[in-house]
Image (cartoon, rainbow, N blue to C red):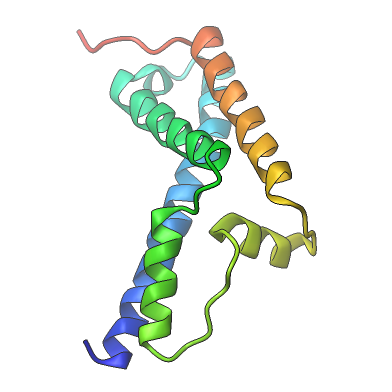
Length: 132
């Protein structure tokens, strides 16, 4: 693989990662807003299951102290491209850059867990329904 192609793939991996984070965070905000507003789509079972599976994966991986596979693949591609890579997780790296906040891994695990609890509570508050 050429360095320029590896760099392009690393950027693509980063874009995918951002889209997944947006689905997790914005999706939850939309589920809550939609639940309060009576939007029918927020109760679609397949959307909610995909969201729940994603959050469960993130919480489990943080409790196990593992780095997200997308982060690992992106960093590997960046190194193949001759670019700099970061050592911490995707969220730790970009969140700390966004708000200038460095924290130990347990803080992020706690935040992921709290977010996971919010996702579970939203299932109770606005339960999904099967399509008829």
